[in-house]
Image (cartoon, rainbow, N blue to C red; front, top):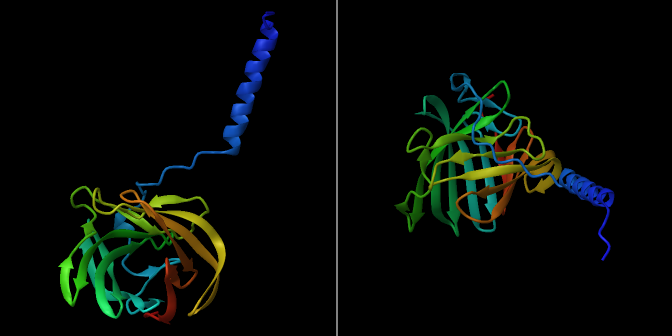
Length: 233
């Protein structure tokens, strides 16, 4: 059998390498989810407005999914977590008319960027009116947990970041899918919405969330916004 010439062999190798490089360029690997956020904690505030999150006492969002409800309330309370005075945001969820969970989430905002950071939560799970557990509770600075980015002030499609980083407890993360979607919910039709896909490093599956400019969360999986109560200006 006739052996291929050296020129043909080298040429073929170059062609294969070029094709591989072109394929890699057309199919870039996604960046890892960010876990470290360059922010001066001393400059974070417990009150303010980001593009997609409002931390003003009295601001309240009502959601519904069939007979289930979710009420997200910005409380007057604050809590010191990991050296930061955070705002307490309560989530109260019912299932079939019965209280299922109450969580107290601790947020702080960088008013120069609109980025809102998540410093932990206390959780009470209910059954038949009684507290049955506290699954998912964590605090930044305790047992190796660190704060995350709950929602960016100026998101870009493809951004990926951890919202909470509590090893073996809570490792939720988000990827920005789009920033210009139009979403219709019972509370109204909203344009230029932020669409994120959230998942967990501890379990499978994902959920879609949508945030409207100047309003905040308007759709969380099957929960849709039905009413807005304005906070203090």
